[in-house]
Amino acid sequence: MPYINVNNDLPGIRGLMAFSPETAAPMGDLANALLKDTEGLSPAERELIATHVSYLNDCFYCHHSHGEIACIYLDGNRDLVDQVRHDYQHAPITEKLKSLLRIAGKVQQGGKKVTTEDVENARTNGATDKEIHDTVLIAAAFCMFNRYVDGLGATTPTDLSTYPPRAKQVAENGYGRHIFSQHQPL
Amino acid sequence: MPHIQVPEGVPGIRSLVMFRPETGQYLYELAQVLLRGESPLSEAERELIAAYVSSRNNCMFCMSSHAAAARCLYGDQKNIVDEVLADMQRSSVTEKMKSLLHIAGKVQILGKEVTEEDVAAAREQGASEREIHDTVLIAATFSMFNRYVDGLASWTPTDPAAYEEMGVRMSTKGYALPTKI
Image (cartoon, rainbow over the protein chains, first blue to last red):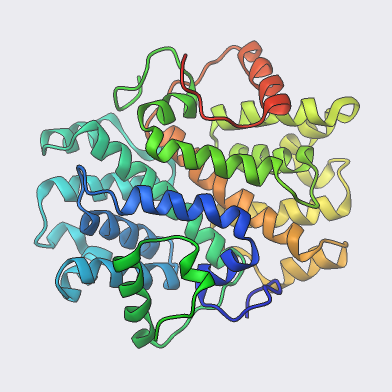
């Protein structure tokens, strides 16, 4: 049960967005612009960054939701998603993505934690300005989404089998109003 | 020096959204609806929450600009802003506002830090569901803005006059995506 009466029984951020559709609109648009973009970072890499940051913020709903979306983009490779959550250094991913995940982890702690060396390192591994920008903003945005969800005690399903249908809905149709205004996928 | 090549001479988040307006437009829309849209909290109170969270995140650009906007909006009572930034619990804001700022401070640390007791205490002081929601979302949103601004090391002016000017603009014109320097 959320801390406030949201007048619905939707899970996670969906219940909060249905309570406040005016603020949900730009949040959904932001999520689409940041996570569905195919230029530079791939949608899979973007969702992995979101999953890693949400895991660091201990936000169960977000790291499982975005982990499942990443999993769809990675052809069901759940082991890889899980490794990126807590041990990306040893995961079979590119050095570029590792250096970007390092920056994302710094952003999670605080913006000032990101150093010139962190950025230089990412650039040496082939990261562009746009990729560095998007990494920082994805990490920062999940510091918002995670706090919104947990700060209001949003309903968090503990049955992990309920996450893949919602992930499939987002992978196919993106973020936006439909995730809280339409019938929930089962 | 910013970590990426943003327009020169443009301060803070403005330089970042000019670099990437595709995401910037929604960041500004969110700020506008959250800080200027319909809410039982006044615009001054919402800017105060934004400044308080930015101060706790040690984000000089966001703290200085939103504190300046809050001072403009509080008018005769502008001292409230500096009192809250110096020592929230001893400030002269209402007990309801203190309980909401307390929640915002918890959100700044981490979402999970907020307890049912914190929310119950705010409700006892008369806070509505909407006020609690808006407080948490403002605090969460500034936990994003602050990280965005400092995580890319955007330019932070040091001249207080620059922020006074920003505060006037923000309090009278709100948030519109900057398109030119």
